[in-house]
Length: 222
Image 1 (cartoon, one colour):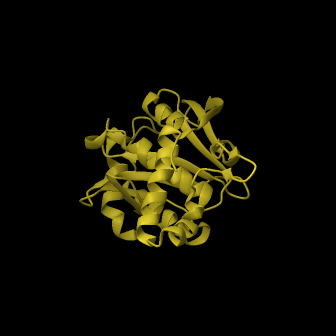
Image 2 (image 1 turned 45 degrees about the vertical axis):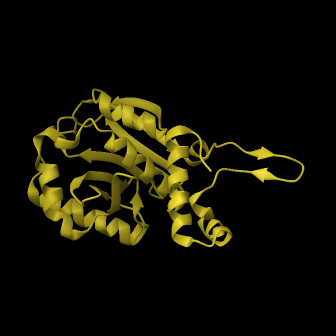
């Protein structure tokens, strides 16, 4: 299974062993304010959601990611689930434990997951459905690079905003050319060539990931 890291975060695919943390997160009323129903998710429903997420990893190659810090403390989940269209396109969301709000964790983790979906999982389109009143999540979506596609209402009558990220838009990074050379940003797909050139595989993997994070966050890197 893949693993994603930043200097302060570790992301790994959710597993059935995460059931207690997931049930607690879904049952916390503070994380449900901007949901369709606005009420905590019952434990049995949360358990079924977890099983579906694990099945998504096995069948589609993507699913929910657990967010933890360098001490492996549970900080939340980046939600990735197949949409209703065929072929299924992933829907992206984020739930951070309230004690960790305001630290930019959702943005940092969602950027990594979006890049992984576009590069490793080879999807072409990512969608997020957000309550219009949820300004914090709107800022996360915008920082990830998503753009507002449409507005509407959900089945409970709440104002809804639909954000999307397309592969060609996310991949719009610079390309420099001379008569002899072409320069393009270092991508995760280039890690093997980078390792061969440097002779240090672990360092090459780390450098490539850090460079990709810099391109996502700041618009520059290797």
